[in-house]
Length: 395
Image (cartoon, rainbow, N blue to C red; front, side, top):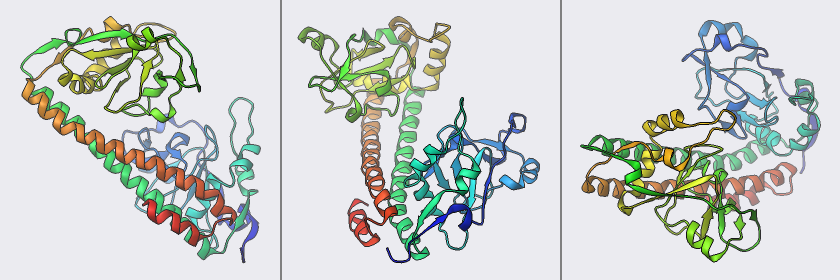
């Protein structure tokens, strides 16, 4: 670790400041300059699905919080400490309530982002202030101690970790494109339908079982939280449960079953794919089982369509907790094409779903590899050459 030294971020960065603080809802526009907020910054990247915009004049007035390529932004409030680097391909952007670090000549932006997301996590937790909503302030950021390698080694560390992140980003882009194509295939198939059928005529319904989750051996136990993340079940994170043989027979899920949330997140649906483990489903879920198994995947995509989601939004009841019962869930019409179109839909969408699952499962492995390497590279316990030997086979 020759040349490594301890420094304060405020002593080595060109600037550590904060984005615009204060209400600015009246300045939001439907297009213009992106305005990053706490929810738009995630560790190592950005989530722009709910990004807001401001006009050019207001952006020009907020010079202090205008972002430049290479700026390192850190969440102050919400999930303090999440950090990412402003990419070079952004023409312009601004931010609200984020810590902005502008690295100096001795500091690599991407190395600093990885450092804050990993080695500095404990420090950030210790510096949070606020009784109601905790936040990380600029003074604490400036006082952050860095275990700083020489600049060439910073760049090398960032490149190793960046190779993993680049592969993660490529997989995510491919999976997103495949998911969009599957949705297009559903829209195309449904548009060719000559008539509509009541959903209740196409499926049977079954409420789930009341039991408790645990880590002991037993069938998997599917809850609303287990169908909220992806279009399929993340089996590795589902707990086990204990049920009788008769309950297992009654509440077991099979390939082609569709689970729909009736409470907590009403209308949210998941499809049970082939090779799923033995599992039962919780009472907050309703199982839809297609009378014609060939129609199951098409029905699932109908449940994800804007038409059904609009129906579900209007059909929910409850002032405190929104809910839908089984009869309401299936009390709507489906545009159902003929069997040949359904078959072509299945033949097209099934491999797309397999591709999505393959790429996102690979991402889980890549993220685990990156997160395992990160603290060891930042502490010098693993050197770049050793990390490269682990990373190259992974990508």
